[in-house]
Amino acid sequence: MTAAPDRYEFASDNTAAICPEAWAALVEANAEGAASYGDDKWTQRVSDRVREIFETDCEVFFVFNGTAANSLALAHLARSYHSVICHESAHIETDECGGPEFFGGGLKLLPTSGAAGKLDLTEVEAVFLEQRQRGLHAPKPRVISITQATELGTVYRRNEIERIAEFARARSLFLHMDGARFANAVAALDCAPKAITWEAGVDALCFGGTKNGTAAGELVIFFKKELADEFDYRAKQAGQLASKLRFLAAPWAGLLSGEVWIENARRANSRAKTLAEKLSKAGMKLEFPREASAVFLRMPDDLVTQLHGRGWQFYKFIEPDVYRLMCSWSVTEKDIDDFIQDLKSSGRNVSS
Ligand SMILES: Cc1ncc(COP(=O)(O)O)c(C=O)c1O
Image (cartoon, rainbow, N blue to C red; front, side):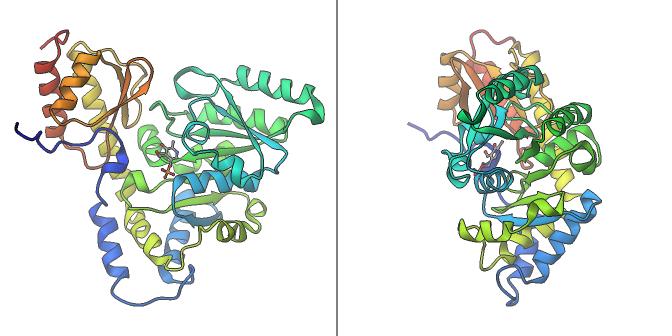
């Protein structure tokens, strides 16, 4: 039996390597010793650059991963008897092993439905009212959390975020954004980062670097300084303060230098666009609009088995037959063409 060839991994954008600019900055940071726990020039440089990119004097913290970023940000915005309204497909609800509830000391997530991974304010309002009607017998809603780009590959427009923020403000709720793929959203909308964050009413953003080209390390950004009060203690207590923080910060410095982060995201989005177009042309049905770096499609079991047999890695996202193909900064046109080629020669129902 011959081994399946090495294939680009569509399973996740975490499978990509560290991008060259992030790697070069890491090597540079490794050339000398530096102060620990964030008192170093790399950490300072990234924090200043974030303020420049977002065009505001925000507070910036580093943690190791996205689960920690979301969990600690939400724990900081809410008390243990509060609740967080989110989409039922939100990573905080489905993939963080109860992290927000754990770090929030008992806070409760309230999942709601909504088309294509986005919150539907009618649903949000229904959940909000139901909780409030129960008075102190139900955890008090305190935060709305949205994901940008969403878990289903769609992107909130500025006016959609503004509407959610307005709704939140009117009910004394904070607005949290899980931005594990924030760069992909900015690239997709071709907008200023501030336009879909603090200007639109977002209070806290978890800004992801891992899927954009670093090895590890996500940023928690508070756009209102008072909300950040003592977050450094919370992160330290949770084991999220790196003693050699410069090695998390330096790759971020590489990523945020010039347009690297946007270029990486643009490439991922544009390859996903090509993939979506070629899949549609081959007769495959896309499940959600392709707006950022992910493509969702229905595939019959026999086609999936054949593609897996040819070495392609991807997995089922929604039962019974919706699969996710995720593009990262490193996927090439050839990877896309090879996949489509194999899909056409594997599938019985695929038009060539
Ligand atoms: C929407 C979203 N949020 C957050 C994360 C971060 O998760 P992790 O804790 O694996 O870094 C991910 C990773 O897949 C994600 O897709």
